[in-house]
Image (tube, rainbow, N blue to C red; front, side):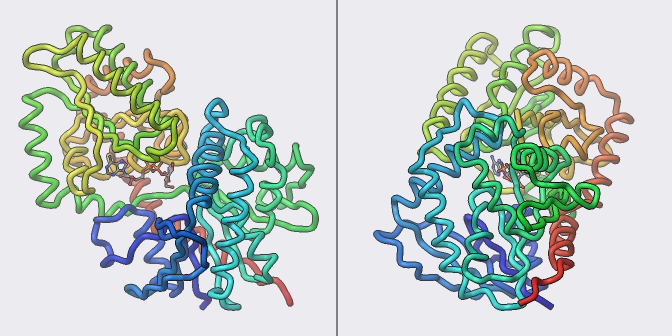
Length: 463
Ligand code: ADQ
């Protein structure tokens, strides 16, 4: 059987299997690596004076991690620059925030070449290579240039933008062309896949074959597939029944003093729709004064990418907004928004989810959104909470029984909160059961197997 080489911007340090301390993605990739054997390669997260290409190999539990350090200019141009200031906003439909700088594009290309140069000697003839996410789009092509004939797959964790938006990126054609070096490309949803195919066929003249499953461009064919990521449902459900989760759940219920808790948990990122969420909640408070003091919103949002200016802006905006809403509505015994700027261990989050009556997950655009799935997995089957979910999260394609909203509409968010608060228990159970069935069926192990099966089914190119 072929080994697996996973390549992603960051590499998760090996931990005991199924510890529950890690996110589902790390667990799934680790389990694939353990099963197939192989290497997980990426940036160490460390800075070095001058790039040396020296690989730090660490043998873990069933597989090896291989990391390299990057120099300051690489981190500025590749990571903070092209990945986080160009592609991330563009791929989340925010061309108003996207910065198009040749220096960023050059740095991104250079670092991908450096990654290719460094990882190439580690790849053996029979290995399958699986590259993750928007940081590394050109890496497959760089590996091909270095003689790599292996099966190479790419999975995009973010949305793929509509073609008219992507056309604003100066090097869009070159970037998309590099994707034809892959054998398989996976997207979370039909919509992201369709947007990719639109750009390739309409803007670039590629042809669609096999009912749209294969796209052909200048003699290269790539198989495209929908492969929605899941969570480790079983592990997360168990986590929600752990001692820490139980204790957290009790503490939260005590501190709620009989009020219904609405919870939001997100990285502090403009794609997550936090300002719009606060405004929707404020609308609910003003439209339903009789409900006001019967609820409160707990928003947990640890800062991310703090060195990028647009992230400083969103942080300031949210502090202002939560302060204003609390100032306008709070009473001696009630604060409408508890806004917390830190991350919590997963078992604590599971307890928070279980204690809350509503999970408010309203990104403006999200590749999938795993918080929505974790919220559902943590619920008490006898008395589950209600998930309010943005129509524009990839998760909405699978989780049709959530209360779906347009996150830009404060009125829809306000209506959805009222609907969720008034929802009878039997309807809550029915909706929860349907969503939980899907989460258990299409979990993260299913996701990675679906992808690796498609990849290993590709015939290897002849010499
Ligand atoms: P993210 O944008 O990071 O991921 P998401 O999928 O919601 O978004 O969350 C990732 C993980 O971070 C979840 O497991 C969640 O529990 C954890 N997390 C979030 N906030 C936290 C907090 N305050 N404290 C502790 N943990 C927290 C990207 C894409 C998504 C896609 C995933 C996986 O942007 O659309 O779902 O990759 O493909």
